[in-house]
Amino acid sequence: MFFKLTPTTGQPLYLQLMQQIRHATETGALQDGDQLPGIRTLAEELVVSPNTVAKAYSELEHDGLLELRQGSGAFVSVKRRTRSLADHVQLARRRLRDLIEQLRENGLLDEEIKRAFEAELLYPADIVRKR
Image (cartoon, rainbow, N blue to C red; front, side, top):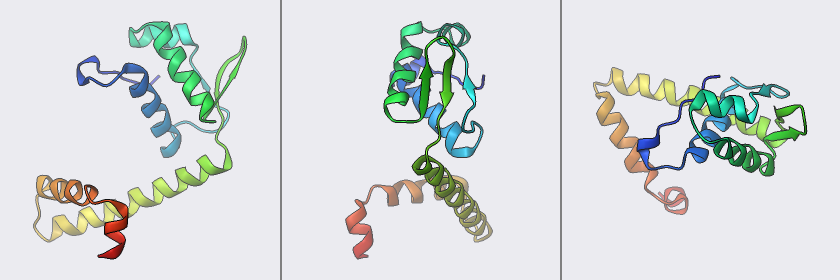
């Protein structure tokens, strides 16, 4: 599989795995009905405790992103809301890509673009709407 956990980040490994699975569904790398590796198999691949994978899978099942079937494994269960979110994320990424290209054409360096995005993300949503 294509997951990679980094123990040195300080973020719990199960959260890293959850984020990567969510990202894979949002970008279309994982589709509705796709089967994920079994808990033990993925734990061995990632060199983590099976409890880490089980917790991530369980949380994602609670969120409605996975369906756990006893004896069969974990399957991606992209509900309409999740599918809609995936569409929105893909559209946002295309728009961001276009904007970044324009900013580069205007002479901004990637680090300057990154700092500008990070600064804007610090504003609470209600303040952004009033600007």
